[in-house]
Structure formats: structure tokens, C-alpha cells
Image 1: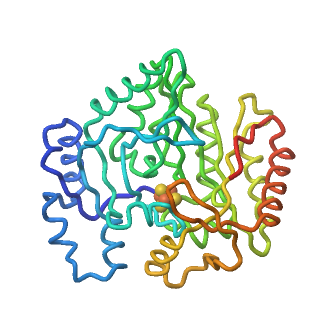
Image 2: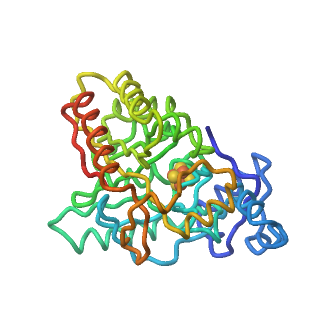
Image 3: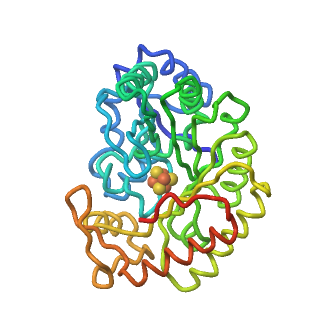
Length: 339
Ligand code: SF4
């Protein structure tokens, strides 16, 4: 699935950058209306309901520049995170962006790529001789707009020359043609976010089908990239065991066997905060997400708010079952963490 916005808005500071000019030409060629950013609020007027605002924003793309160059930590996935994009055309009901960017659910792409790269260099150089890892999927799914910007490809090529820098990304999209047959030098790890049929069908709207994600993963693997899978959020529901087994069967049938490179798995069980629950219920009033606080354990989160996780016995069941599937289907792979 390839996303194209219904409206594009240009921030004035972006206009001097070559990528901005390239994008404006591309949108004009595609007959997608291009406005100044100040028109965003005019078009997206505040009389809209919260759901209309969300839906309009999800179809809007902003072209801007990244101003803040201070990078945040990104444990356990990487040392730091940075963004080429914020926001996402996907509408996963459980997504952290529902709360993180609740007032700005639009998609914003950054065109000052060279400045972003210069900043990365500073972080890498300050840690030599240690290798510094960077995640680019913490505030978006950058592959969702890669056919528009080409920025992930440029970033992979940038990292291919970095002896002490490594890149990681994760996606629910299959739009990776742009990344095949380029020099990645094994410095970028591409992970695919996968899940059971029930989770994808009910909660991951406007993302790619599991078959397409797995097909893309196999192409990434054949192109020699380090490959990983994130199963998140792992959910507990009727038939969960059967469905997660089916997922692994599908994966096994598509990843070349015997696989010669290490494949990794990251496992994240479903959790929610009260703030997320309130926003989700407003945007998806018929959601099937199970957000009953009384059936969960309260856990203090890293951002100073409580999150609700499965009780210990359920969590252990999930961890053991999925870990055993991994050992059974991909015995030489690594489980990086379960959280
Ligand atoms: S694809 Fe990823 S970033 Fe996009 S809405 Fe879904 S979970 Fe969020």
C-alpha cells in the first residue's frame, strides 16, 4: 500500500532546501494540492470533531525542517533516536503516537537532511571508539513515506560509511524497493513489525497486510541486511496461541532456509495508559482493544505515568509460548528482549 496525502502544507523555513523543491514538483505532478503551512488551521477548522480532525490530519503531509537537534535515548532498542518523519499515515489503534502526538496527528517530513546528518556525526564522534546505534522509527514509520521522500535510502547510505555508527528501523509497510541493491555495508538493521491475524485485522488500520510485510522481509534478507522482527503488541485473547503459531509458520515459509544470518526478535506485550485509553475511545469508539484496568497490573512507566500491563501469570504465558515458537521455528535466532 502506498500512501499519498490529500493535502500538502509547506513550512516557510523548508522552502530553501532542495528536497522541499523536489517534493513540491512531485506533488504538483501528482495533482496533490500544495498550501502554505499557515493554511493548515484554516482548512482543518476547529469546528471539526476530534475524529474529523484526526482523519483530516492523517491525510495531510507537512514539509518542514527539524529544529531541535538534541537526541533522546531509545533504550532498549538503540542508544539514541532521531526522526526523518514524525507522524504516520497508519492508524493503529494502540499506537503510542495516539498520545505522543495527539494534537498533531499529521505526517511531517523533514527536508534538512544534511543538518540532521551533521548532528548524527557529532553524536557518533563523541563516543568513539564505542559504536553508537540510532533508531529512526520512534516517532513515525519512515518507510510509509519512503516512496515520497527517499530519505531512508539516503540515511542508510550515510550510515554505510560510518565505522562507529549503526542504524535501526522498524516498519509495518512493504514499500522497501528503494532500499534494495544499495550499499548498506551491514550497518542498518531492518525490522518488520508483525502480528497475529486478529491484531492486524482489528487494530492496524491503513498498514500493509502481513503477507506483504513478510515478502518485503524476505527481499531485505536477500539483499544482505541484518534482519529482525518485532512482535508488538503481543495480545492475549481467544485463539492467541493458534494464531501466533500460524504467524511463525508463514514466516518460516518465506525466510530462506537455512538462514545464514542472525535474525533477531523483539517482543513487547500489550500495555496502555489511562491517557491513551481516553484518546483511543474518542477516536475509535467501537474499539475491541481490551483496556479493562481492573484486569491488569499497574506498572510505573519511564515517562512518569502508570501503564497497565497483563498480570504476571498471563505475561509469563505469553513470554514462554512466543519464545518457544521462536526456538522451534528459528533455532539460530536471538531474542533481544521481552517487555
Ligand atoms: S504503523 Fe507504526 S507508527 Fe504508524 S500508526 Fe501503526 S504503530 Fe503507529
